[in-house]
Image (cartoon, rainbow, N blue to C red; front, top):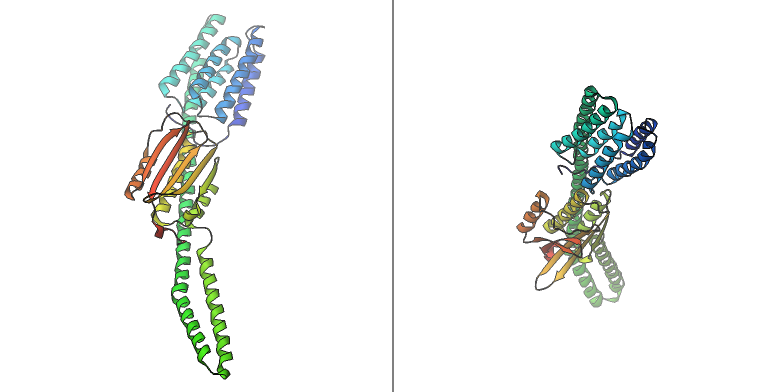
Length: 374
């Protein structure tokens, strides 16, 4: 097949209206009394095929196209109206995206050849002008449909890229905010905290050695210093808590993903992960979402991000969707770029099929200082 449909535009209304018009006209002009009854199941079958093609445009395309074409071949001798060839135009619109023009031209030529033979059998003459008009109409409609689908696919991909950019931007903002909070907490802890501790110790010493007239005031000052030190510790603790950079980025990414239910299991130790490892994990999740939307009909995608503590701590991120897979996909630019990114930081990308489930996994070396909650 030459192309895959990615966009989510709904053609239900226009397709059903076209099918209804063609069906009514074909039933109105049957080629004999008994042909009317033969038409009904064929029209019903075509409706089922049209509905399937609209709802699942990339699934079982060859089978659907073959059955549709055979149904049209069977329908032509059962009606006397040339408007039955609207089905041929609809066939061209649906499948010109998936098949090359030599194949489409052959299928259309066979249908028009059958129509010519049927008309000659009825009237003893050929209707070249009618055939030329329908051939031109089918060709034009096929070209337009192909261009429309390409344009919609590009628009859909642009929206996906924009959402990826927003998710990455959100991650960078979260990392920046997290680093700023940590900087403030470190300053409070290292500078103000140490000085308050020294002040408290000195006041405690003075309180113990002072005369009775000064002891009460020094005790009060010592108590105030202790309270201030405790408040500073609480502020430092609050600055270190909250949603981490990685957790926030993944939440933003999932919230902006259409037509796919995503779930993430992220261990607490990695919620505040930042820097290059966090970027690699977000890129991995983005690539898995894109590939699932582009190349599968899956409705659910799950991620698991955890730590493997062996001789060297390693971050493991896995992704799997709910559509059965039997063959490992070919690595294209997206996966190749992900592998190169991981290689540059000492990581690796793996794919395997377990019980008909495609499992994608990355592994990254883990350094404690890359976590903000340390």
